[in-house]
Image (cartoon, rainbow, N blue to C red; front, side, top):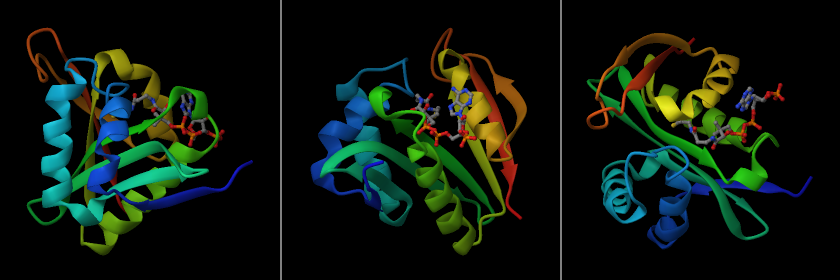
Length: 151
Ligand SMILES: CC(C)(COP(=O)(O)OP(=O)(O)OC[C@H]1O[C@@H](n2cnc3c(N)ncnc32)[C@H](O)[C@@H]1OP(=O)(O)O)[C@@H](O)C(=O)NCCC(=O)NCCS
């Protein structure tokens, strides 16, 4: 398997990351979501990572810490042709380790209903469904909330 490097996200990654973001955010457009990714990157440069294979960004993860102990996993996505090779695991492990170091105890993730096939991935990493919110991402765009208590 080619070597995967996990490194901090850079502004120059924004274009490819915005494209990958469409896999996890089917309620919006790349152009609109790009601003959100950049805002998160500016606010949480230590919590934005990309996975790189042969010099090409193939996945990313972003998170933020809210109210001290509570963290939010903003997004995680891996390019379709690279899924199922352990890249999501590398990204999530890196993010969870970093969040733990920053004092987070609880990590929440919001999964758009169209991305429900990602839920077994979260369960593999000990997240559990804790609820749902109707119209969370806009009218008709319901979300499933997952929760992890960091050990
Ligand atoms: C969810 C996602 C990030 C997982 O990344 P990935 O690189 O494919 O995951 P990995 O290869 O690291 O998988 C890790 C484990 O989870 C399991 N897994 C991953 N996706 C799964 C799925 N859809 N169904 C069942 N199990 C799954 C794998 O079997 C693997 O277990 P193993 O190590 O025992 O084989 C990726 O599928 C993706 O980008 N999906 C689209 C975007 C999305 O829905 N993001 C989540 C909402 S924010």
